[in-house]
Image 1 (cartoon, rainbow, N blue to C red):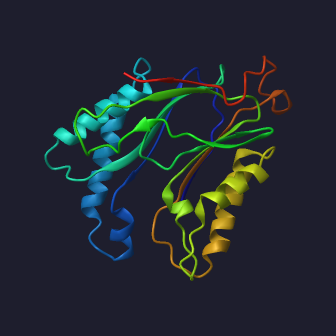
Image 2: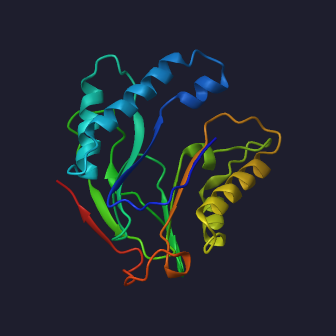
Amino acid sequence: RQQGQAACRLTRDAIAQHDQAGRNKTVAQNFDIAPFARGIQRLQATVRSQSHPSVSSRACVRHSNDQLVRNTDWGRFATLFYGILEPVAGRFLYCNAGHNPPLLAGDGNGPRRLETGGLIIGFAENAQYEEEAISLAPGDYLVIHSDGITEAQNESGEEFGEARLEALVLQGRGSAARQLIDHVFAEVSRHAGKAPQTDDMTLVVIRRLGPADGGGNGPRPPSGGSDRASP
């Protein structure tokens, strides 16, 4: 279980979440996880090497994909969600390479799935990717999660599911990011009951602060506004 919360005061920051194919099966069946651990380390190093303030989200994902495909001993693929956050402007530029779509939710708006991007990485060289720029209004939430959250099963084999997660995000509007994180993990645990956990659970919640939170009193941008771009 991993969770993330940070007070962002930077001009520009990068956020990435990935999931390597086959890892949950390896853990569940007690196979040798060392090759997968090495694969994750290589994936993280590759993404870091391509991450730079002057590089767009789609370019980082495209270059990371090509590097992994060219690496003859990689031999597997992964999902990747990569975003660039500009906290002061409330702008978020992202590219989703086959990852669970993060959720964007705000006052009066139902959760919107961030799906713009392209193919999983490490599968095909020269794959093309799109990116999208969205506006985060004060009070908006961005919820980035791994499939260990939505695919957590109870003893009857029923998954927690996207619908439950979306409902929790809606219910949690107005609460602090930490409170939403704790509430989601508590509900996933309650759903699973005594069923064993077979995959890692990673959850990152970003909430743009408003005047009541001490986050400034600048003009409110259009909630959920977006622009898409592709090569």
